[in-house]
Image (cartoon, rainbow, N blue to C red; front, side, top):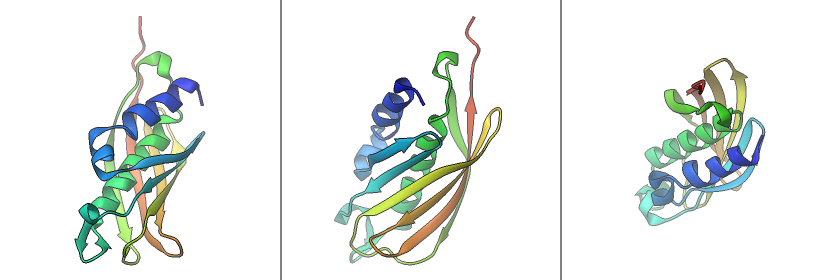
Length: 140
């Protein structure tokens, strides 16, 4: 993974308006894997201190996007978008920071499949499969 990829992931994915609104931060990045954190705040809850499923789903999407971009060929002008997102909620997420661990499980010419696990301190709260389309445009 290049320095340019890490910059794009930190500045434009973790730094995107929605990610900033939610407070999502990048904790670690490696080839085909990232860890992102959603800090607990009242603004991401649904009732009481229970984190809203939409907040968790947004964390999943941001993490999968970042993982997909670890393998982008920056010299070829990449563009991307999520084309599929399936989330299974496993447990409630009351009042704590969440971490999303995203790992690429298949990288094709333009389609990238990513598995994302979201957990609090002790409990996995969601697992997702994300399909991301990452197109590279040949410059010339």
